Image (cartoon, rainbow, N blue to C red):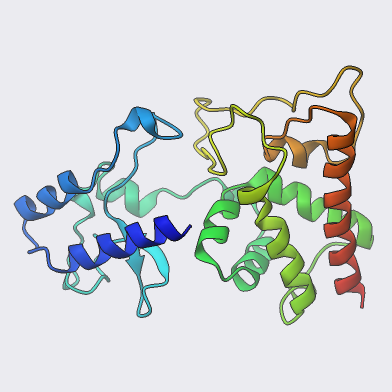
Length: 241
């Protein structure tokens, strides 16, 4: 995360001094295109060189070409990006319509780290499985107040979200904690993790799948289940107390 934040900070500072002409913006683009696409987790996914830190405190990840960014003087320069102005303005990732408004509000108000939020917010299947498990344990639907102003429940959600970055049972051929959220079938996750001979059924199957899991032994699977058990028990107790 530190390296990524440094990269975005440097890019943001650098872009602030770029004259807003087409030639200069394209020169910035060439300079910040980064490593060759084949060395990236998803070679077919465009990595935008205009991604930076926005907002008054420069703590939000966003588009440096957006008209609201200081220096752009209200001009929308997104037409100079890879996808173009219309795509950048109108495209929303699947989580926008696949995650309920309640769950989205909980995420927005509970996760204040931009890196953790960015990793988890596009994982609509993982989030659905998480909240489904919580609701099963509570015996009712989750509401925003279960997490908002409930520091213990919010901390438990953050702990779950951070599994995206530090899950100890991620399969070896996984591209990392990132998620290819486009629904075009290019980088689909395996139907399920590879289990040891015989396999063991678990109610966490969907969560394990979305975390790109692979268990080499029964002990690892039991430990993975115990890790999730502890998180869900912690969350349930925080909400019910």
